[in-house]
View 1: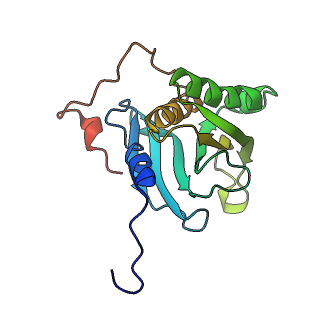
View 2: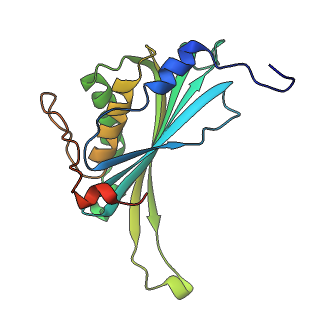
Length: 198
């Protein structure tokens, strides 16, 4: 090892980061590796996802894994997951006062459904309205839901947490989750959806 080289990451972080990459996801979801933020923890990794229906992007998200062997204030252990989901929604849905509690329940129920044990969860649900003015006055008014959350996973294997996050994005996009006894079908090679450019 030369001066300035970083030591290899701890094995626990490497195992957890590898478990972020699910072998199977629903055909509506595309996953990709993203650059991870460097200042939040000594070790980090991140993935991004988009939910599509017939080539229309309905929701986007990021899931960040943070690892600090010493833990940090507000964490319950050395690992922390930080999730972000944004989805377009109809104005009448975003004006519903129950949207916040319902959107939060999408996350907690998805974690429970995938047996992804966690603690110290917290987050926010935001409704955003975008209205154009000036030379954008003719643009349609758009309404969005944004959910930001973080929690401490109880185990290194994060595959259940990733699956729950994918379910959360589908629910935000208006796509119901698959029943627990139904597996997602991989895309066929001749499926034009599989050739979508990221």
